[in-house]
Image (cartoon, rainbow, N blue to C red; front, side, top):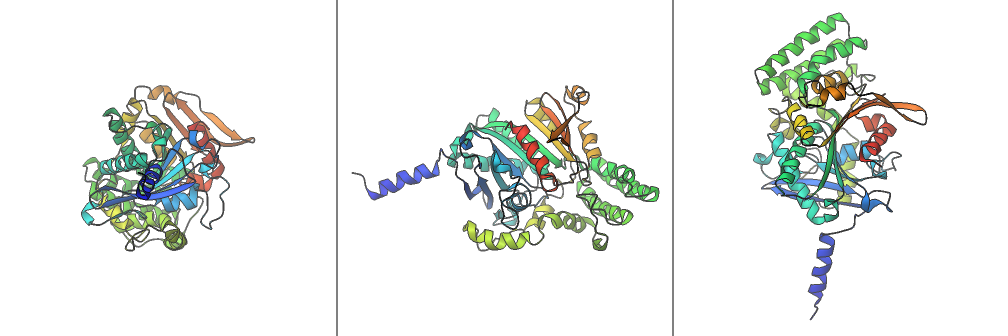
Length: 426
């Protein structure tokens, strides 16, 4: 006999294990005790091909920047911060999922302070756990191509996620069609950026020779801490180093050197200074008002004691030991595993400047790296306009995005969308 409960159970199972991709969905995953990650999925706007198009996972920087907030509403989501349709949204030709990672970021939360991540390895494991749960709800994504895109510190999260995912695939504990990672202006080797800031700003006339020498001395102090693996001190000195840069450049903007804010020079030092610089981009109004107002109401599942952006300082402080550590070896691992790795860099970015990106790339031990270096560098044009330059060999590629700072899709939306479409083959 079929009861109403039976009908309800069948409907529930069908909804919980969907073979269709919705226009939009979101939820929480309890990845371990006291740790809950929030995700937000958008189905591709190309509904006729949606069920064949890739899944792109976006990870924000910080650590402590919200992908569901900043990446979604200020970079690549379907609506801008005024809730108006975005012309160059990444969901035109891809299914896109934003994740507030690590726990404590955005709408993700912990119920005990001991649950915050203190290593990027833990972040990677958490993201694999979240993905497993997501694939249970949407098994259609087990076979569709999966790409991980990121920005800034999200590069360290993305490489850790990718390494953990490759290990899970090798151990056959997850089924997914993992294609590759795209590292956007990514904080892969911090000291390589710090040691190239001075020359970059000098060559662009942002500082003079006196400022260059001051920056060299400041950078050397950070280098000494890194060389002795005093990671906590290195992070504090990095914060102080930013103060030196601001002073000698009269407030150059770390995220786009064509902008500056000389009247907002910080008086803070150490970790407080470091966090203030990061949070200034990811937590500022009116985004905070939007996320804690209309968006919170729309989502309907955010716990009463969770405030968007409220715990990001705790996220950063718990990861301050990991913050300055280099992850070049993880990129090497992914290349040797046959994973596609794309590195893209805005030529106006300071915080993860292109010279620093090239410096850490030159430290790769991947056997084919010299073939990559000598590969032809081609222009990328749309409607006769050169948007970027592109170099590729086997499973390593690099894009130099023209006219863009740290947030490539925000500064150059068409270039960002062109980058996405060419990487995922749309």
